[in-house]
Image: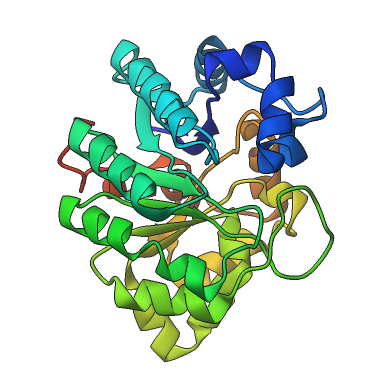
Length: 285
């Protein structure tokens, strides 16, 4: 069974006219101002799943600055899940502004039955030590509820692109170490932070840390799959497309280029995520 662990759904009114939201939220504008930046509807997502042979998708919105828009986005994701409970696994986004409002939204959504939190992201100052530390109340809630937390992590080097921010890897690793009861999913191969898993002490800290593959064809050579599996463990790599940015076809080509074996493909394309989601008592899977 294939599972796509990284699919975005924006609120319906944003899909109808993104212009005012690009003006009101600079981060959203930097990523989606261009009409070439696709916004997927529910029917688009279901068509993508059906045409790709994907059984389920983890779906979430955007970390809006406006907490009310975050709430609206989460509610639409939840309604989508209710209409397609066997296909859509809901994760809850939180405001990029953080603070008490974000923690309350985490409590509301996890209490409602969301299967996880994320994709958590910041697009202004980046992931600084203080900003990562501000997640602690939310992480405590996730640990108690037994739900995974997905965090947008990009690589600190290489070419620039919209949404790329500074990331303090030392602070990130310290945050993971402070929360050993939380299953972390670091999106986009964790910006390459997994390389430090070659250090025995960091490998121990990463005991419950997973990587998703979102946007990797734009970032890494196909060898990244095999290297990440060797460092983190085969069970720690989760297929995520970042749909509608990319679909599964580009990733299957990367598997061919990287000579990924069939058993390894099956683990990455669904088995690993299924086992992780089965830890969540909130949403039947």
